[in-house]
Image (cartoon, rainbow, N blue to C red):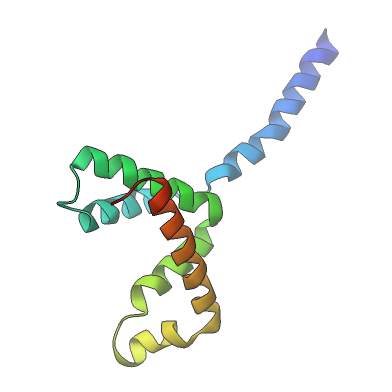
Length: 117
């Protein structure tokens, strides 16, 4: 009986890391994204629908990106349109462009999957 209990405890401990990595974006990142998404879609849907759909989108993004990848891609995506040299760093960097391309693709798929208008 004791061997069975010990085996179950060990098996449970081994499963925990995989459960944690399923959505490894920080809570603050998730909340900020949802708030920005709601603001961007203001007037297109009510607050409850927007909250639900924006939460769905960030969950889909979290399935594809780690915290660091998400921050880099989201920042590059937002800042590449800055005029002059300030935005040039984000427009001209090949690594940023690859990240932006992947981010745009996953973002568009998430919007479609979550039925964003």
